[in-house]
Amino acid sequence: MTGTEEPQGTEPGANPFDELPLGGSAGAEQVLAEVETTKAESGSQLERAENAIELKEVEGLSQSGIVFRRFTRHQGAMISLAVLLLIVILSFSSVGIDALGLHIHGWWKYDYISANPIVNDTHPTLTLWPFSLGAHPFGQDEVGTDIFAEVMRGIQQSIMIIFVIGIVSTVIGAVIGAVAGYFGGVVDALLMRVTDLFIIVPALVLAAIVGHYAVGAGSFVLALLLGLLSWTSLARLVRGEVLALRSREFVEAAKVAGAGDFRIMFKHILPNTAGVIIVSMTLTMAAAILLEAALSYLGLGVQAPDVSLGSLMNLYDSAFQTRPWLFWWTGAFIIVIALTINFIGDGLRDAFDPRQRRMLNAKARKAASAVREKPAGARA
Image (cartoon, rainbow, N blue to C red; front, side, top):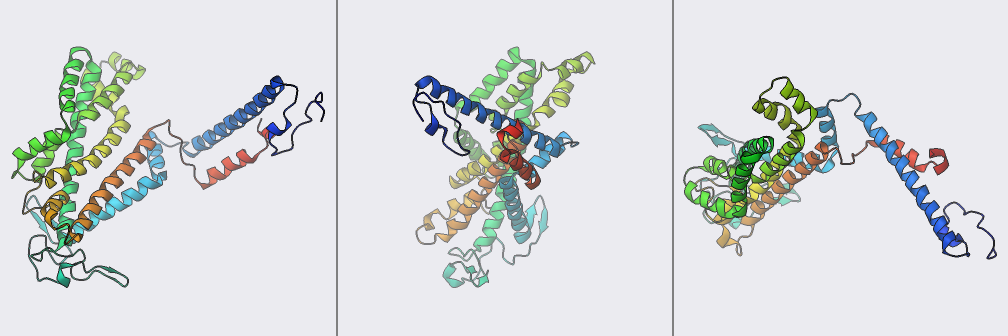
């Protein structure tokens, strides 16, 4: 090739920079522009093909059906949901249920209160190979209390607390956010200033004050009071969604039809914020188990003779150096429960958010790969 000859084209797969003309930067810029244009056209057509395949998959499904389909495609969320359900089933079936006057015995022979004869010098009797639970798989404390029974009871209490906190905070946050966003003006300013007052004070400080006055009132009352402090972030999110929705056509149509303000808010607007509300609820629950553990570790949470995961850590904090297995299981379950709820929240967020790219099934991925492998000229 001489300096005056034009490139005759490039071989498939060759680097276009190896064939740049020697006549200056103008020719190079032209070749680069052609390469970028080809890439953009290929990517755009591939994206359109994948979107068409995805729309074909959900054709004929309702909105709830689409959300359910997308959620079940999220592998992390489904695995986390299965793990969380297994933990809940294990905790309630093993030591039974003892709440609200209901006493149901489980399949585990020890309870979380009674002292028992010391076995294996209080060390865990669980062995993985050959697998065996032994008499006390999680070990015992210095008086012989079975740690497995205590941890299972602690999981029950912690699960109850985080669900109560999640439900109470969701109801309060959704209502305050909807009222503030819909009415605006003085109502909005007043409710948001109250929200700011709760936000500027650290949550742990407020929770410690509540826990101090709730000592002895029971774990349900503690959870209820903590739920009254955990609604602020959801209120702001719902307010923003309502501000964007209140001027939409369906809201105006409801007003023309004679619907009242509260009917419009709770019948027409709030259902359209379900994605934000559900995702925020799961994230609040994930934070709630850590909050409850922190309070119980400080001695302001669940009180003896009942136990929670946090109170167990507080109970055995002096034995960390000599009997670390008293912390292994409690800490592991706190981490696992918090992680599973967070992953479930991620799956719900991806399912409700229309801007997220979806996971295609095997057949759809094969069709998308066929589109990707076609020559650029065939896709054009």
